[in-house]
Length: 271
Image (cartoon, rainbow, N blue to C red; front, side, top):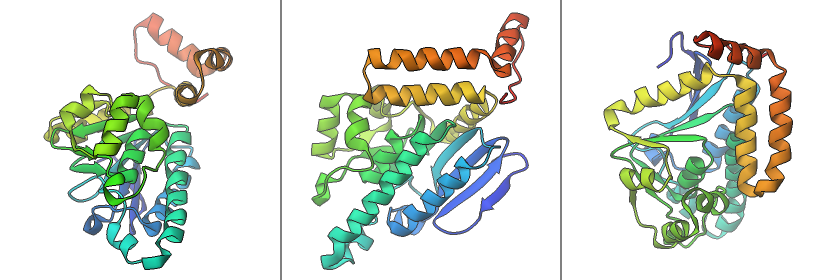
């Protein structure tokens, strides 16, 4: 996908490649529909931390290998635990929480590329913890947890209602109805729904746009926006003022202003 692509993690349930300032995190368990179990989640946590520590990364693409993005929890794995399932799920949900929190707290924008299906706590959790979500027209979404006698997780109980509204979120969680791409875009669950054949190009356009952007400004904007989900308007104002003032003294800020005046594209150097 990238010019001069570098493979950082080339095998296992989560792959990681890098190029053009973009890290591509790919769920890689197609035989289970990229189903989330402890093995996949520990691998995803490790990859997120690897990205977090890589100063070259300016944007992240999160995708799934195979026919679907993710079908949610690996139900066959869950069923195999028998009486030990409650303990196993306490561990599994804890890992999922770490993963979605890790995506939110990455300093760079995260773009989820959704194809096929995004379902369950993992599917909804990943979608709701991404900064930008682009799906193909054939993509489908489903909460799914209560359908198997469980409750939503992956942070979706906090994020979903803020994204689509309380009434819509309650409907999705309790009915487990399938949401098509058109509705997902209309209610704000995804940023854009595009023809399947255009999905890769649109996602890459977003990633390249962010990779060329002002890193500190984008990081601050992302942090303030996420903080604003859980804090009121008045509480957000001091943070916004502080970040704006601090960023205005950076070389990237000066470059951005100069580029506007000179009617050219800015060249940001994370300085």
